[in-house]
Length: 290
Ligand code: G4P
Image 1 (cartoon, protein in one colour):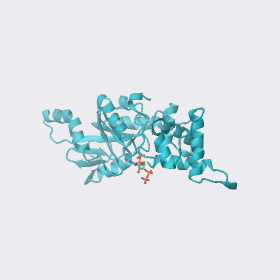
Image 2 (cartoon, rainbow, N blue to C red):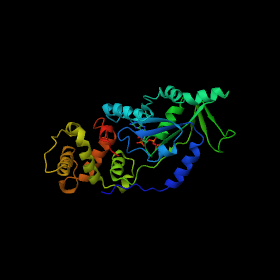
Image 3 (tube, protein in one colour):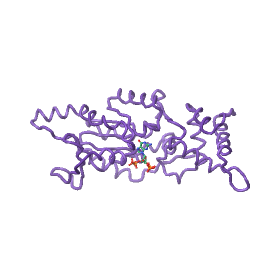
Image 4 (cartoon, protein in one colour):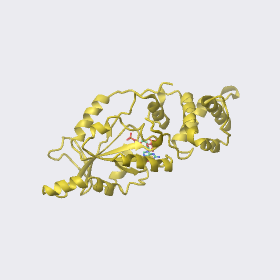
């Protein structure tokens, strides 16, 4: 299947991002911990050069803990500050402020030398659609008491959430576009539900997803549906057999008692997305996937 991401308003998004980036010191970039590279934007490093950087491996509750640790090391080695978080529960978010302080020490020191004390670090949250930006801002800002309005020198209409005396967050996240020209990236974004399912052929995606999961997590499939992963001529044949086994195990029947593969496919994809297959990561740093 052709996993296509439509660029849509990319140019406009890019322009807005360039404007907003001028106003901030720190970029808080959310990625999906299950696909940390595929859920990154290809241009963010260029757009955010000269800015402090923090990468949040969000939805870490759905990703393999071992892989989360590896990705943390991977990004740290590239010079980013990194934290594993769950924006939904707030897990891992407590240390953000300390990390921000540490990351922005240089700026704070620079300000101090110029006689500016206690000027808050300004940050913005960025990420591709569905990585959890709004969830993150909401739960992060829960502790915040004030929303600061249009301050002099700040572009009109910008709202800042004052988290404490040393950190302010732009209240609207920057929406980035994924590497939509890359098919394998498109496929992984479809797996995690970051692509409109209406343009997806569910059965085909389920078969691709079974193959992707079977690379490292065959046991998760076997356990969930109480099946034995079958032998077949090739990976795809095996995955098709697995979908049939899932349809049987979950009694997905259509008219005339025939198996309903669409139903089985949707059930499988939903089991993966909601974590019922366990914590699964679909790309690993040592494999250097795109
Ligand atoms: P966005 O602004 O970047 O587009 O993403 P948004 O916050 O809308 O989050 C997209 C979905 O991801 C939401 O689920 C949200 O609850 C979920 N989510 C965000 N962070 C986490 C996390 O750390 N772990 C898990 N497991 N899920 C997370 P939804 O299905 O759209 O809504 P709902 O079912 O939560 O109500």
